[in-house]
Length: 552
Image 1 (cartoon, rainbow, N blue to C red):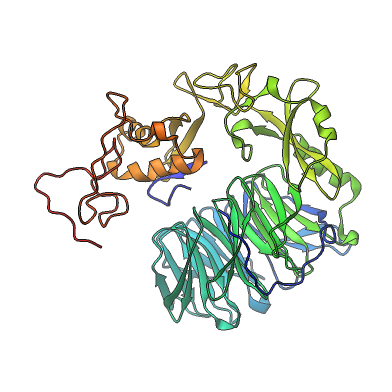
Image 2 (image 1 turned 90 degrees about the horizontal axis):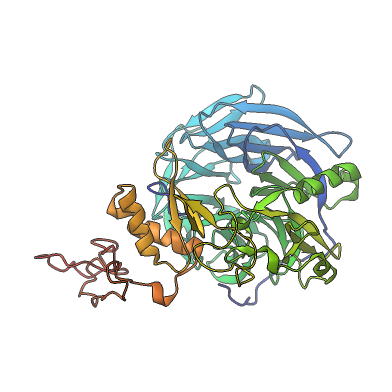
């Protein structure tokens, strides 16, 4: 994971309640298979969309947008247009109403509406002051955009400027969703909330996610679904009621879409497309990809398209006549199986992978217990391999070989512990080296655009506040980053044990934590927020002569 200071926050389950659920296809009825691979982009495909006519629109970090049409044989797509006009990454794309006109948002802070015939911008919408992270269109043809500048903007058809600027989110806006029948606009943010806007004001705030909310989609007959960095999907009624929480992944979930049968399609950092029942959250199918999957969308014919970090968009179908030929499917599966997955990126893995303690390949003769279950085994050649259980196929499908990442420590478990298998027997994959020392994590922290990331080393069992403070001192960074940096460590490495919290940096003993002062002077949760945070105790620091801040 990477942290981005100054730009955005560093990037649970509840029982279902009764609700009107859409008719669900039974498990196996809509088993998706590869239909086509859309190759042409030079970098990650960050966003995908479908036109009413069934064209696929892809947007990429290579600053281009491409439009693809299915060929008459039904199994292949041809590139019909390449739209170039943004000066930076294109991270958001949508189509407008019945015309299918393309609209895009970019890191260049612009929204562009494209002239499809000429392949050039017909309107450039300016107003956002940071990255445009999402775009969508209303039934009436208006454009809605969201940005890292924390605003949602509504652009009327034909207008040059935004007719509405919706403010209220405390962090970047990652997703916008026009609600049906003019019922308003939903927005999702890095502040972990979803807001419902009606008449230019916030009518409701939906809380529940424990991390950045990355995506939204309509669920006909129910309401909407949200996807989050906390690894969950949450189903909500349009009046804001929480209906169901689905644990979708042990990694970030980047995108979500609704299938014609009412199922939910989600994708993310764990390199998979997953299909879930919206009735009870059951995982119905898992499709592995060769790299993290940034985006998913549904086509009018029910097919599903994904945008992947390997620069390829892929279409999957449940219709036999649109499936790719056996050789193409076999090549795709071989590409997935051949990938090398760093031990630090294995979903749900805690600590290193103790190779000697792994079971051999005979463990794959034992069936899995649920769709998407992972199992790591030691191959005949001694290489650890990771597999996922497919209920439809009744078999373990290889996801790839488990390897050290480029910064990994070689050999044994330096800096603490024997890894997942315990005991420290044999090499433990997953630890990383920084300045000659092995760490469980070395995070990349982006400080400013155009500058290389700074390494943030951390070992499990450390006090995250102390690790964050050391990082700030080492890199001469402002003290205002302390809370954000420490929270990023906690979110990605897990909370520290009680014994590691509030450790005195000089005596290594438990530090004295003064009781909170009236009015919440600088303490967490008080009116002062993160003001005067003590770097060693993470509590409000004493300020001579200072009067208490007024209570919130």
